[in-house]
Amino acid sequence: MEERETRTEALRREIKEETGIKNLIRVIEDLCYFEFSNPNLNQEYVHGVEVSSTEDVMLDGREHSEYRWCGIKDALQLLYWKENKEALEKLDKILEDGRL
Image (cartoon, rainbow, N blue to C red; front, top):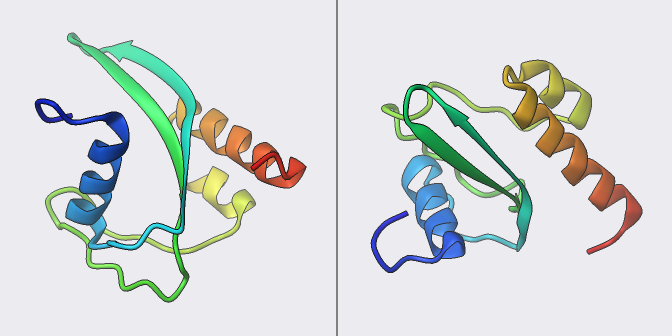
């Protein structure tokens, strides 16, 4: 986060900078939170976002090498970190339950 920036503002800025996506249909805030050390303490707030499948994606090559739209099962297979998998499973359950 940049100085005086909310988490949601940081989320929108980072998505635009890293993917070129400007139009978010919906933001699901504070999906979960976790922290880890390596050696500094890193805090991660996880949010879900909905974007149109027709949205143009232009990756920042310094941040990402590729992307793909896929279903939950494929996405879980592609993720490496257990915390990322847990967050995606939580988002999937929220969406399935229609809690938003």
